[in-house]
Image: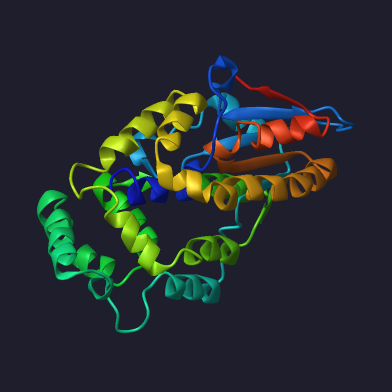
Length: 289
């Protein structure tokens, strides 16, 4: 479980990607986009969606480059209406009247119960919610509880953009992201729960990722992600196809005005990554350190 469903949950909410190996120039979260007729540069930044409050960082140089831009582009525009929030929440739940136990054997149900309540010591109130939520969404809930107080880059950048009077938009819709997860059947999500023995602490993997993120080491992030077989099966849907779809949208925006783009850190590097795809289209893409 700590190698599959929990890792996928971490990846889906901010890490998805495959970085090239052996290239120290990849040690940066912030990249400048220039050339190819752009009058002024834009910037692209790699985020991690779930980060402990005390580990959150956004350097003075990052702030300077952010404040030089006129618009913020996130994976999705997080400024949702109440109706959109309610609709999204509904899609995260199992069918009415169902719980995870309806998709598990008695043996698996007992193992799951023991792992969550006794090993991870998840609060009973959280556990009751967890039983009614689709596994991939539930895994994110578990991770957040284990971490404690958290921040998200999307929320913090959104606040700063509003303060600066910047336009805010997304590269894709929330519904598109929900569909990516909901296209994986509940049965397959349950299988991911038991592909590894339910043991150990999922934060072991998360803390390795967090350390790599704080070191701005995209190569290390990739090695951790590549170790998971499930992500190799989902790679095109969650990574390659999305990156390719984003490029024309990014180009349109950076030609209009200086733009700060913030997407999951792993989307940046690799042959199919956003940085390389922008280079192929004639832009100069270089790390900001």
